[in-house]
Amino acid sequence: MSRTILVTGGGTGIGRAVAQHFADRGDDVIVTGRRLAPLEETAAGRETIRPLVCDHTDPASLTELLARLPERIDVLVNNAGGNTDLDADVATDLASYARGFRANLDANLVGAALTTRAVDGRLAAGGAVVQLGSIAADQGSGGAYGAAKAGLASWNIGLSRELGPRGITANVVSPGYIAGTDFFRDQLTDERRDQLVAASATGRPGSPDDIAGTVAFLASPAARHITGQVLNVNGGTCGTR
Image 1 (cartoon, rainbow, N blue to C red):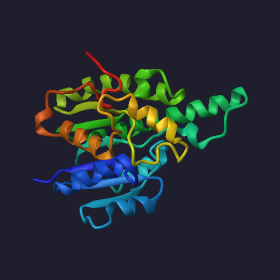
Image 2 (cartoon, rainbow, N blue to C red):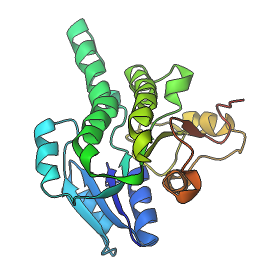
Image 3 (cartoon, rainbow, N blue to C red):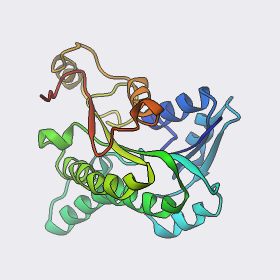
Image 4 (cartoon, rainbow, N blue to C red):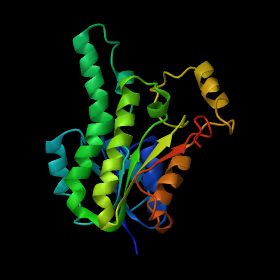
């Protein structure tokens, strides 16, 4: 029986890989984002992927999206986000710094919280919510971006307790360096890339498919007793015990 999967930020990189992974396994997938063209590229050649435009930081946009969503959602993947500092000028005054900090919080934490609240009544029993975190949350790096992803992981713990009685799990997948995305906006130097790869135990960058497979596992019957967790997918760059 096919499920309905909602993937935010599904137009590029990890979001695209996640959406196509579920679609290729027979699920009905809705991909959202602020730009229609990349969403249509994700859906190209796959009839079970439906693109819908939405800004997940905007309550009004989410309300409009709800009118176009089905009454049942089995899996919500809060993937939309990214380091908004990479799209902004360097802050030179306190007001600019505040705007930049809040932009990261909106993109990576508030958007996920708003989306989850918006679709809460449609989340199916036995389903799953998966957040996309970041290694930056544990390394104290990335400035406001790392702080936002750390907040996402903390918020997810409370969410798991709210959803648990309904048989719905809530977890965070925390990637390290993932090649083949537009995360760095072409600002990553070859030297820095080599440093990131060298820091891993596997000696290679991660791929969007690595993350897609992990998300799919957390949404599978095999992971029904895993909730409130952060699952690191970083090639051993940041280990746990």
